[in-house]
Image 1 (cartoon, protein in one colour):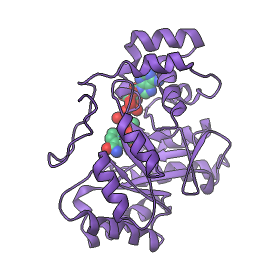
Image 2 (tube, rainbow, N blue to C red):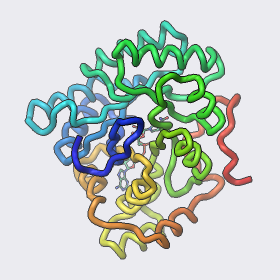
Image 3 (cartoon, rainbow, N blue to C red):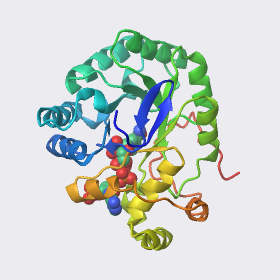
Image 4 (cartoon, helix red, strand yellow):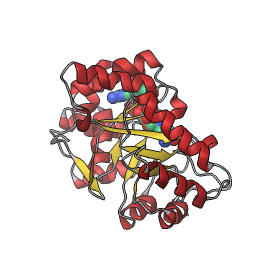
Length: 283
Ligand SMILES: NC(=O)c1ccc[n+]([C@@H]2O[C@H](COP(=O)([O-])OP(=O)(O)OC[C@H]3O[C@@H](n4cnc5c(N)ncnc54)[C@H](OP(=O)(O)O)[C@@H]3O)[C@@H](O)[C@H]2O)c1
């Protein structure tokens, strides 16, 4: 891995800044992944359901062929879609994802929690995928604290991260504490609130004090919490902007001002199965 900030979980060093690829069409995904690696990103996030795993793999191969990176320098995450949580289907998708990427992923996540099949069946299958060499590590996405604990209790291997929505308009106090207690980590999806941070007066003001943009301030706020952030853009210039966050530091007061932007209606992507409830951050 490179010398950029990373969080070490169960012996795995995961770069705190990654590059997201949701909604990137294959041609854009390939171009932007190769460009992100050229800029310096060493962590790429995709998922089976994004329908771009093959293009993401091509982008990484383009960067390898250009001499920009070696495979072992890149942290690569993908996800098991909820339709594939039965044992056989999970193992089949794990094989398919590795084949599409052309690489064994570093991390394979369960995309959203689901009541059926049981957590035990799905966690056992996910551990089996790891034991069979279909992924180097396993983890979760969109699991509230109670289900995060339950899943770790059922998993032989450490769950390396729980990838959830997190940005200045959400509180995540309880889930961050849970991740810490479990020896895991949090990865923030939609870290830029899908671009909404650009017009925020507080983030703009703090940015001006550092000569930085609201996006850079937001990503810095996340990594200063030791939270992994995976911003997405289809534009080369923004990919470079979002990577340029390692030469300044937010003060404790600025961190607190950004935390204070959280609001009850801040969630952008509430696609959780109604059988589960997000942590009650506003109670
Ligand atoms: N696990 C899950 O369930 C889940 C759910 C959602 C997302 N994710 C992952 O998280 C990644 C990031 O989340 P996201 O794609 O929802 O949203 P995001 O990264 O918060 O925001 C992306 C949007 O912000 C714009 N943008 C990028 N950089 C900017 C900047 N510096 N200033 C202003 N606007 C900027 C982009 O537009 P341009 O393209 O025009 O630059 C794009 O429209 C995804 O790509 C995916 O990998 C995971």
